[in-house]
View 1 (tube, rainbow, N blue to C red):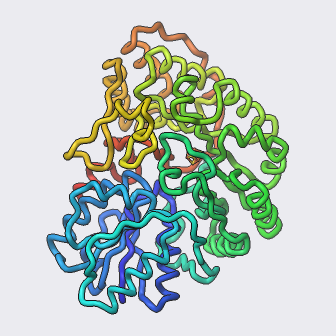
View 2 (cartoon, rainbow, N blue to C red; view 1 turned 90 degrees about the vertical axis):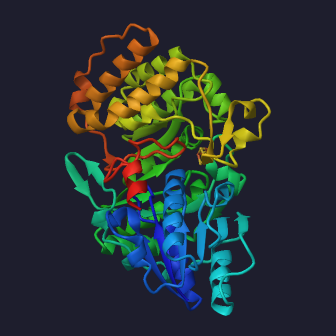
View 3 (cartoon, protein in one colour; view 1 turned 180 degrees about the vertical axis):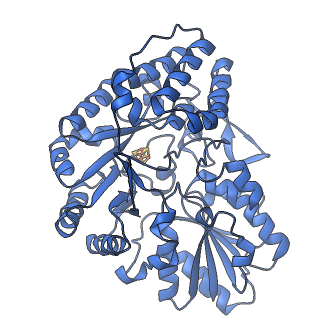
Amino acid sequence: MKVLIASLYELGHQPLSSLALAGSLAAAGHEAQVFDYDRAGSGDVLSALNGHDALLISVPMHTASAIALGLMERVFDELPHLPIALFGLYAVNLSRADLPPSVGLLASGETVADVVEWVDHLGREEGFGGGLKSVTRARERLRMEPAALNRSLLPPLDAYAKLSVGGTERLTGYTEASRGCIHTCAHCPVPTVYQGRIRINKPEWVLKDIDQLVEMGAAHITFGDPDFFNAPAHSMRILRAMHGSHPKLTFDATIKVEHLLEHRELLRELADLGCAFVVSAFEHTSEEVLVKLRKGHTRPQMAEAVRACREVGIELRPSLLPFTPWTSPSEIIDLFEFVHDQELIGNVDPIQFTIRLLVPAGSLLLDEPATRGLFHGSESEPLSYGWRSPWPELDALQAELSSRLPSWLDSLANWQIFEQMYRLACSYLGFVAKDFDYSREQERSVPKLTESWFCCAEPAETMVIAPITLSRRIAAI
Ligand code: SF4
């Protein structure tokens, strides 16, 4: 069978799971191409589908799911008999949506074998038969041979997010040492599929892939594991070997506050092995919000994590979740002031201050008696549940920050955007803005990727900042 795997949006990273699936399909005797719609810009999926027997769509996040709905409609209009499958973290959530009858499989988790089997079945049967099947698996090991990952199926690294450091940009490769997560934060899509488990990628597989990325020109590696210190011994083993083979290579990884403090003794070595920065999901400074999200850390621990990392020369890049049903007006102001007081303004992508809690279908928040009554489903929005703040001015502020952000990004430095946002928040919510001294922030340059990171966020017009906004992307498909 000849299948097209479409990756729609992966935050500027190379679509690793699409590549892994392509490798497994090739090993099973199929011909698989990967079409990275996000990087192809105006590329037409229908033209790319020409001559293919099936379409497999990667939906690792909510934004990709929203784009997938438009794509499936268009494909069904033009090619009503072409079988479609969706795979990735959000695939099973799409069962609430009104899907075209040509969709035969929704597969979330460790489901490569299920997708390959579905394609095998297509080759044996007339059509895909059997109706829509949903599978969620987190137990099986992903059987990926090192040779199975063929990165030449994708555009060159230059098409993807790069490391920006000291006024220069470095080509960046994306890989993962593990998948899943041992934690069960209430707002996170990962535990809805992995239920507190992780799957480890073999170190030799990861290292071989990194060798391949370096040959392609990568000078920096992003480890996209949900948490790099879920299995610290495994991760450090990979880093030590990577540094031995490529001593100039730098890297970034995502590590939660709790793990940064628990494994504090590893931080200096992390820096010595080339760590450019660590992303850490701070989410909020409100203790109540942190408890509701089951984050497992406190406000003082966040400050401690910043100190611990700075002591060894690592900058933290916090991700935030400011707008939740539990956030009060004073807690929004407090979040801005914490970021200022911890000298983190240059460490936080401005989009982080606009993020509103996403409650996708299947969210753990919908299971909890204390929180589920806050969220309301609607037929017009099948992918997530809506909510309103008890303080309408907070909903209005979030919408205003979100709509103003694109023009600020075009014309202002990070610290200036922070100042605009902070002052706007104070004026909306009736607080007196403090006169902060931004002179230090004007001098600092904190390493970052060239595309903003966000995940558990309700999609907004401004979210897909490069190279095209979300509504234009959906309309263009
Ligand atoms: S938010 Fe991070 S630590 Fe929490 S469950 Fe999700 S991936 Fe794991």
